[in-house]
Image 1 (cartoon, one colour):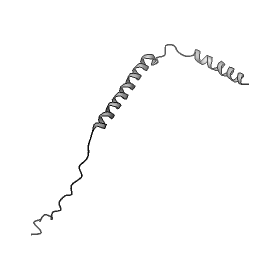
Image 2 (image 1 turned 60 degrees about the horizontal axis):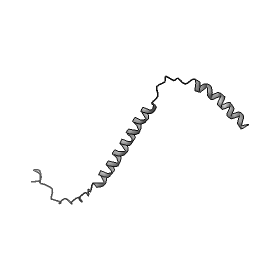
Image 3 (image 1 turned 30 degrees about the horizontal axis):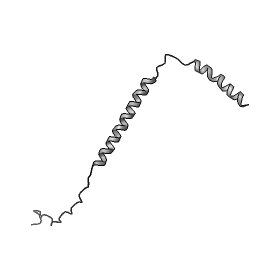
Image 4 (image 1 turned 45 degrees about the vertical axis):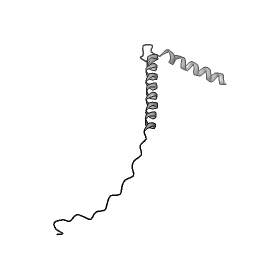
Length: 78
């Protein structure tokens, strides 16, 4: 039985393969190379950014309490 289903699948896929247009534009090898170079560039940039961010030594100074001053007198209060 399994041989029949495999044979049947092959007979249905062969006509589909013959219908492929050989003039159809595809990315091809050049598209893969460009994509791979861009992926490597992004990886290198992220690695560099991570290295630079790890070098940053930033500690925020604690906020100093503001001196509580008496409210300013207004002309109406005088």
